[in-house]
Length: 114
Length: 112
Image 1 (tube, each protein chain N blue to C red):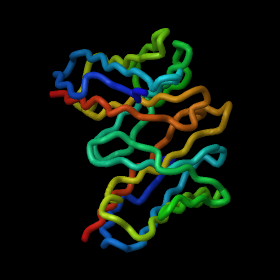
Image 2 (cartoon, one colour):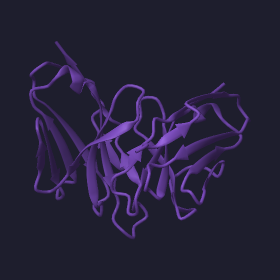
Image 3 (cartoon, chains in turn purple, blue):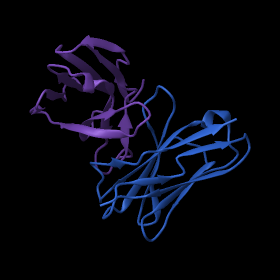
Image 4 (cartoon, helix red, strand yellow):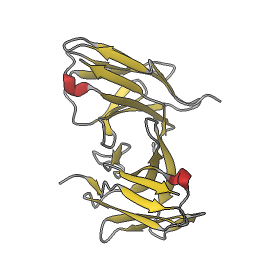
């Protein structure tokens, strides 16, 4: 089983749509969680951190469910510029073998069309 | 304030050759991590350097080695290149406990 699993998509949605991505992780001791965005042939860039209480940044909302080891990202009112690959990322706990390294999911491809 | 820089941007090698990739971290950062990203996949952790020592290592063979210099810059070396080593190699830097890592633009390696 992969440490971090995502539905690779692709997701094709019209402008203005709401789209949700899901991610599961296998290590229950994982400490930190993030969503990164990667444009075609570019480096990944941090989109937002994910907390158990949930967090929102404009049109983007991230949620963490530790009991189910599940992370989600919701994008409302999709824009053409949201087209990218969205990567779910997990960091292991301090003192563990995964501490400090980012473990990425495969990435979910989103295409927003006019 | 310069971000993470990597060189070269592109590289073509043949099987069996050796390659060295270079990374300069973001100003003020002391930790450098290297990742390999194959086409259509998420980045895979290779190793991480802090205080000039390898602190963490992923599931990569010994053909992959690295170094960190006193100025915190880093090199990734790959020996006896295989076709499967063709990928985008990403360097990320951070300060201390690396929760937030900043990525460089990557080096795209093609092995023929």
